[in-house]
Length: 415
Image (tube, rainbow, N blue to C red; front, side, top):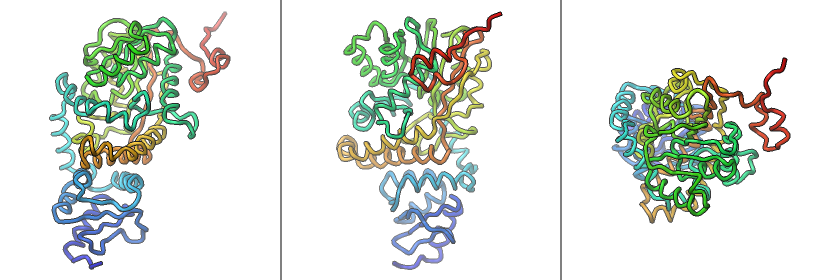
């Protein structure tokens, strides 16, 4: 293997300086390559030519994503481990939060605005890729949000049901209550609430493919009278309900719309209702990767808990419980990526190899982000100022034993 020329070596060193002291080896044009001194590289990145080299220098994150998607960059080693290390080292690197990166992110925010029209376009680009695609690697019910694994050995199907039951227990759903769901996916959770907890549900979503699938499932299960799937934006929610729930939609709203979102929730449940938001979040305000927003999740913006205060505070909603299921999402994604890889030939025949590489990078990068603490998964339970207390301790949230649940229900003090 040839030695790296002086200019090439200098450029490679600049890339390493931009991304931080990651234990990786960079190889340019099949030359010897370089890595940070005193570390054992966990992966090798093959850079084929000057175009890719200069893209990495200008914008390491997006440059890498584009080159990997195009097949111009190859990673030798564990892709998830490589990305996890890159996330950890990049947070304090010069390229992270550079002026160019911030300006480019602001411009993308403008292009992908989550207005009524913009949200429909953004959601269509991701969720309307075709149900056949998602059926190849999601669970049988097409639940496309973080699962909850009571034990590490639980299957993906078991963990998704456990997640739905966990949310229902947190909400304390009772037969005969009314629930409105904002962003219902393929309808699994709305159907689960109606079937297992005896509630009536109105579920809103602007993905045509998902709504069509959900309505078919409701008809097949004989739940059409208890669950209504409405192909409309969450801003069009109308009516009064006991419960508001949203699983995996808050990160698509945009922080500028949070106060309006809170107003819609208050309009739906008033001061006596309760609700739960399940969403990908951050420890502090940070935009989502521009490559991810360009190719996978246009308009996406995982908020920090502080940013979500605009949803609750203006309407005097009390936050009752906050849980972070970050590692559960990493495990969920491991299941998805494993199934995705097994179906890659079929997916390539449906789309192309570039599509496969983009989604592989997205899934692997998401695992790395949750494992490295870059992304969080929050469940926030809240209630109106006149809502009756639901539980005395949190024990009932993690047990389906009736006696244990009964023992932890709230009872008012007696004189």
